[in-house]
Image 1 (cartoon, rainbow, N blue to C red):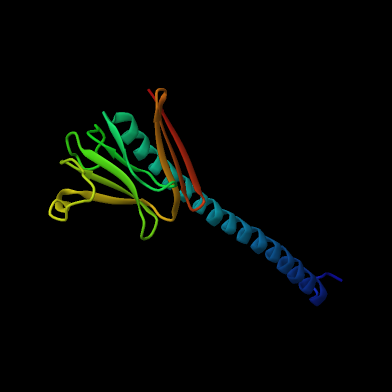
Image 2 (cartoon, rainbow, N blue to C red):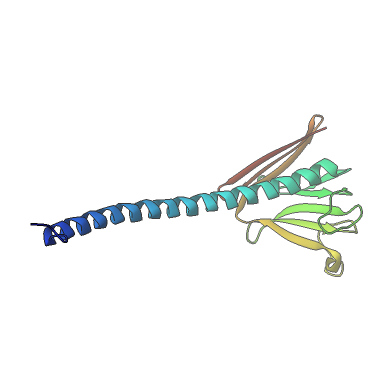
Length: 165
């Protein structure tokens, strides 16, 4: 006698095996999706960290003079006048870095005119303001004979910059 098809038991076994394989594949695909999301977040955080580091490094490296204003023990107010690094196409801009006390946001100010604290509201029109990072607990800048150093801690980000002379 010749068999013409599958028996019901054979069909049920093949469906059960297919379901088992599909379950394992779904678990693997879900793990790949979770890893992709995790590493995408890490990559974005790394890029943000490198953007901050790059802008601060260029400002410190290309400034002719650096003045540090009085701040508390954890935060510096740094005025770079003038520098050759501009984000807004200003020739020889004046740049200031400071932490706003209201929300601990690290802010970069850039202007064609010298930045003098406290800022005059009438002159604030020509000052470009960029919030670089939020939740900053430490922003210190040091200058020595060997170079300029900056330390920044904002949330989980820890950035150390050294600009040799």
